[in-house]
Structures are given as structure tokens and as C-alpha cells.
Length: 74
Image (cartoon, rainbow, N blue to C red; front, side, top):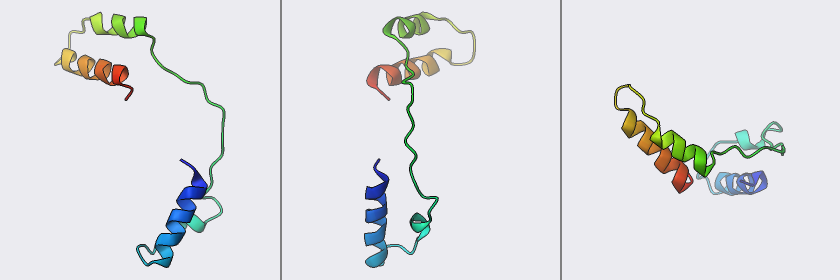
């Protein structure tokens, strides 16, 4: 999210009395852009994880929810 957009939005809300929060004006309220590595599981890794049998309480529900989330882009 663009930090400038947030600051403009909060400034307008302050002027129209929708908020009294002025923390966005602090100089530490900033965004530092960093290069990051995308971390994700491959299709093969997801398939192996789905096939894995874990002997714990309700493992299939947790695994199924994680796999569903991974496949749907959550």
C-alpha cells in the first residue's frame, strides 16, 4: 500500500473530524522499500504435503485448509 495515499486519506479524515488520530504525522510513520524474495511452495511440494499422513488430532482438516489456502493464493 502506498504510504502517501494513507497519509492523504488520514489527513482528510482529520480535517472532516472523522478521526482525531494524528500519529500518521509522526516522522517515523514511513515506508522503507526493501527487496524481498518471494517464498512459496511448488506444485510438487504441495502435492507431497497433501499426501503426507500425520498422526495427530484432526491433521487432515488442518492440512486440507492449508493446501486449499496455498492453491487459492491466500
